[in-house]
Image 1 (cartoon, rainbow, N blue to C red):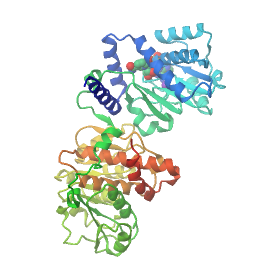
Image 2: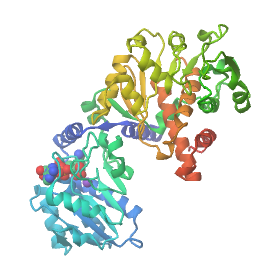
Image 3: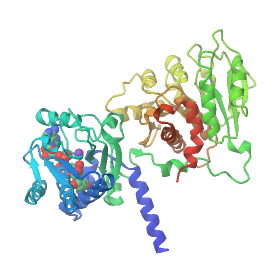
Image 4: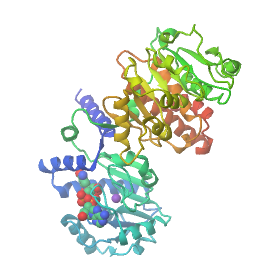
Length: 521
Ligand SMILES: NC(=O)C1=CN([C@@H]2O[C@H](COP(=O)(O)OP(=O)(O)OC[C@H]3O[C@@H](n4cnc5c(N)ncnc54)[C@H](O)[C@@H]3O)[C@@H](O)[C@H]2O)[C@@H](O)CC1
Ligand SMILES: [K+]
């Protein structure tokens, strides 16, 4: 029993740590609580440095990569780097150190002196590192406050032209801890070993070209200190597989039947964009939704039925240019558990928008559904809706809808948009952000550029519709949407592993949805 409690405690802590995201200021406050409680600064640095050194050994064993070059800055990021240098030195690695800024914090200075006393080569210029097999970047961590310029910026630019793998401690030096922006110049890392808690900047699109593979080095920050600083309801969460898997209907009730597994309606398609509604349908199909109805222009019905034979396909009257002109009166929108409107509809007519906005179930608006909303309806319309509205804009659609330029403060901009429109915003950047009308913003940390192609978004819309249709009584909309976002990205990653990033066309993505889940541990 005792063992089970301990294991449970460790798992719960791990889940919380993986979900937690901090700014530099929050990390500073958490750190100072730990130090005030009695943990010596030097002991923590020692512990962290040891963990980093062991991770480097696992990534780059001595037998393959015997020469390690270490770039050490003036603050405690540099202190960590000197501890790592010493640890790896005693494991037999040949160490070369570059210390471009002479004045350091006391603890860092002490470690530098000790490294020198052991006979490690320490230079001021970066050239000393050039012949090394691996570079460790301990120049700046979350204490970087101002732009990097002059000789230090030149050094970073020079280092970025080299071909060796680079491991950044905490953050790639030069990356803003909160926004992920480049402050003048930034190291391009192969791996970033983020210390203690995920820094917000590492989850933002701007830092992606610099951060490489992300690892969290957990150094046992007490959960009580995290809660004391972030509160019970943190503003930002990182999606994890543990939380995402909970929202998927993978375990069916033994007595279930098709009407209990939800009924979704997908409205879309046109002569111009005939395929997108099929991709949405295939996304919805993978969710195991019990029943699916698809409303398309009448001329598309045979095509859609060919791809989704199980669906009830309704052929609608169409405009001259082949968009849906109206919905047949026998289609009762209130009989569905979720509706998606938008894939392939074009902006030719807005005749259907009012009807879908009036529905009493969750509504996913995507693609031209969003553009029509931007063009014809004030956002206040959404305030009146009784069920959740989900908007899935990419940056361009977001700008059209909210006339707000996504900026460095992207998270705040998206959050404000969700609050003011009373909608769940799924912002489709490289890392998808989910902002609900109230409550925490979620960021998906794991994805792939393979998903950057036409049709990927249609699949996501279908997944949302299928999952929302099967919602359990106690399931929050955010939870369901997080699961969909995570699943979509995991399928992309799965397909990219099998077929490279070039081979993840939207049909392959649909076909990978089930395999991606089945292959999860
Ligand atoms: N938070 C924690 O609990 C822990 C933090 N540790 C390490 O400590 C780091 C933070 O340490 P610090 O607060 O000392 O910060 P940094 O090591 O990031 O750097 C701060 C130093 O850089 C200088 N500086 C800032 N911007 C500059 C610029 N543009 N050009 C030139 N100099 C500049 C500052 O004057 C200061 O001396 C973390 O990133 C991590 O590596 C670890 O040692 C252990 C635990
Ligand atoms: K660093």
